[in-house]
Image (cartoon, rainbow, N blue to C red; front, top):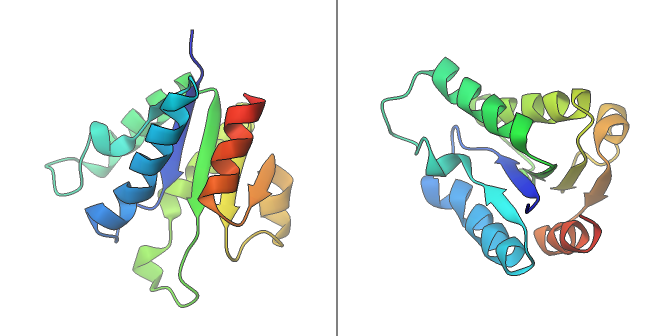
Length: 137
């Protein structure tokens, strides 16, 4: 059975293109290397008629079934409070509590103690994070 990689990153407060472009790239890369991915856009596209709790419960369902979590925390230097990746950070803590490996890439959080405490491996770009997952899991 193929390993499942959960693609975690901001969806709320960003355009569909911005939230989905990296996920499509990761899916293509990882699928070619024998890994499956879960993209939350596949079950609840932004703009749909979904309740926040419905989205969260669906995400937790797939997070529970995933083997590895790939997290995009590459966020702008100046970010509006409404665009902080709240669900993404929650997914990271749920994955950590479930003892799942968390592979992340970020431009600003790598030196935070709480980040270091739960992230298995950290990178500064998507390409290195994807390569690590493909070669390790």
